[in-house]
Length: 325
Image 1 (cartoon, helix red, strand yellow):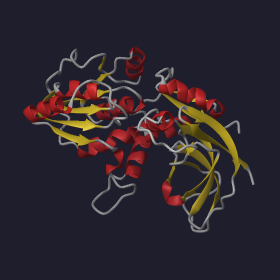
Image 2 (tube, one colour):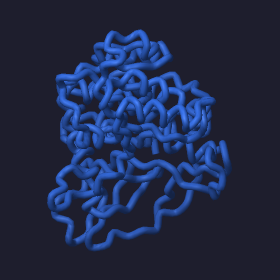
Image 3 (cartoon, helix red, strand yellow):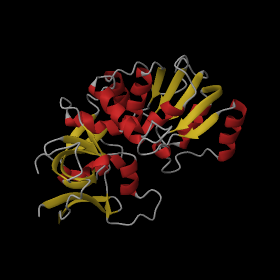
Image 4 (cartoon, helix red, strand yellow):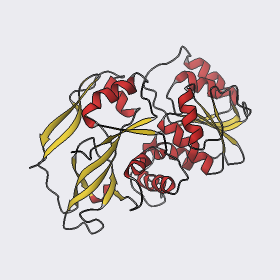
């Protein structure tokens, strides 16, 4: 049985790479695969690492997306064979067993570092599926972390005039290098202030959301994509309700899991369909990833999470590279 290194949050604000034996066998519909790279979510994983809500139970496994090489398949798995490269929702560990239906084939010419990032455009894609605002109106995207960076590019690719906001100059520079045409430090300085048909919050910050409400036209939409992990301002619910009421805004959760995991009758836009579409757009260069990530050694996992939790990560996101194992 091979040794299976795995990143574990052993306590609040502490991560370790621990080893256990990999004892799982492939069932008839399963795949056994070895991780090549896995991507860090600076939102969801940071929430688990920092225990924002309190009550987390440790030790805790973490991670939710990887690019893997197929090692073994069950007898009913005809779509994949050993050696194939797949995209799958797996934790940060070297070996994984997954159901074949939970895998997506990675195009043969696509770098694995680019393929794993397809997870992040799909976070904001449910807003694109849901919105009634057409590309004739400007769109406001606030927050240029990895989700916001790809959200701005995605909406721009679909024909919207996008104005992206982040107070961090390095993030704005990365956005500009990735082709985002309008990257600003504040909402108020944008020329479409008060005229946005759609605002997409990718910060989860209540202060940012309050600022967005005033920038959206009457009857517009506000999509809350960022997870509100903690209170970030002194704004209160009355202020929020007042602005929404008199702006006639439609406000909705942009939570990605409002869609089914897999396609259903009358619901073609599943999570996996969005993963596949995001991967295609990245591979075709419609969404740029250059400069958005850095490869990191899983052995230095605690350093990575410390940097994320303190806002000190030098790049927009981190990818763990398992190829030396």
